[in-house]
Image (cartoon, rainbow, N blue to C red):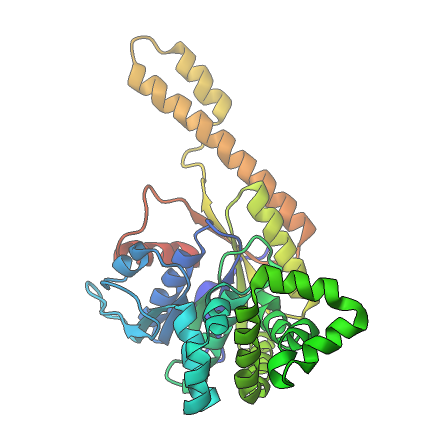
Length: 369
């Protein structure tokens, strides 16, 4: 089993982007922040992009809040050789900024006020994942940081993150939306054409479900959006190239639990099939055994104790810990048998949540040890 050399990855000047991915609830955001802090401590100009709205991450970084633009983190207690910056993705604001930059003042104003745009910019499938990649592209283009660490959106499907640029681009360029937005482009002729083609029942159903006004809004949106659509797809293509480049590394984060490792396995296979640069798996919140006493020996000793409830409780607790550690090792061994080429790093579970820079620094040390 190969071990991930975290410090070598962070120190490599050719390493420009590290993407932490995996299912929700496995400590992905905290891992990304800990990696960013360690990279800054070792001399990199680092920015971490997170999508987690929890205030605890901002508090751990010593900030009152995180915004949609990078903010420098003032590190107290030790002096990093580099700098640490952090930001939290605001999906709607990122979409708005993209429109303002690429649509031109007049069309940008039309788009931003359009009710259909206001709907898709917050709730359209794939928007959050795409905007995370849009923001990554923006950060990379500035050249202000030599290392960008991305905390990807949590998702049931490991495919969402990789597919988002293509899915959102295809959806907005799809035949269905073009048909629905035809009326405003041709004085109603487009909708009549659909009806005359035998889709009157469908058109009536669509109008009933989303309303005639939304059809009008959608049509106006597409007309304004046409002017920037080529750039939209071009940036998606460049983002895909960046993710496949030699300067990018993917770290799959998972808890040592069946569901999380099953999704991690799926993600590893997809990254491999897409020729994405996978650095390895981080097994987070593991429970290593801290003593050589076996579980059976601990239970046997607990049975012999008389009038020592505290010692008995400690022995039984140790036996439970041994069982838990053995179960986690079996799960991780099954993963490594299925993916022997994937390097592994373990991070033991902490007693409580991370709430400050010292906690993040501790995780970074454990990641690299």
